[in-house]
Length: 324
Ligand code: AMP
Ligand code: MG
Image (cartoon, rainbow, N blue to C red; front, side, top):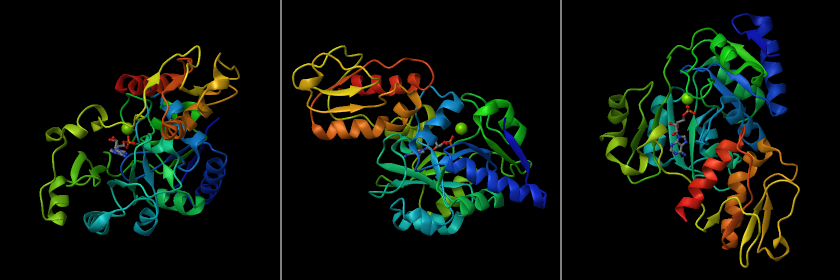
């Protein structure tokens, strides 16, 4: 059962915040009103909680999520903004602007939230309920739009309930999302600022602050494609799919309780989930790939079932295998 609270009245508002914070601490998901659309929020530092976002949305792929924080200062603990980023933040935060910038080493954000990328998308929302939830939880909140994959973004609380059902533990109902479209996403990790996604803040307003034109994603091969993100993390070592043995010189990316023939000779073994739990496997996928990449040996990946989060895990493993 999803708990829904009317945030326009004082008593349910207090109860809603308390219940939502409890849910976030337990690794559950919260339907969070923001000024753009309703978000599906989880503790960004908790990989299993972030994995539940993808499971709830039924996404066949992992894409990087926007992490919501309270202030520019909080954002700067997670990413390196640089002069252009700071100028944009000062002009438009809190508000419907997302900045993608190099992630700081050790920033407490699950690798799944960035889909393994060295960059991180951060936003400071303006909606009072989102701000209160971030403050009351003391967390950075990873939140994509709170709709099932392929549906339109939710601008009312009942859209969230209809789309996600029991997968969302708590919904904070603050009425209609005032902006109603997603945030504008600006990429700051390259040589020049790129418009990764048009949204709530017009391009010309951003260009006025920057004093220069934004690079168009269509004109930039690195950022074209579905979700406007063709750049994906893939390990720099070869990866062999659906392995039924470990060959000489290989590392093993394991799944489940079984050991493959040749495991005892593996250069390294990382098991995504010894119990065969797909949520746990998704939560550890990108960290596991990075650890095995650091070992430097080719990777033999055990088969992963293709249901639930397995579909997105297999999508990413297939891309990694194709790249090698
Ligand atoms: P949503 O979570 O649905 O609001 O969408 C997030 C948007 O931000 C998508 O368009 C992503 O492609 C983009 N995004 C998030 N993180 C990154 C990143 N690290 N690099 C590039 N784009 C990103
Ligand atoms: Mg979306």
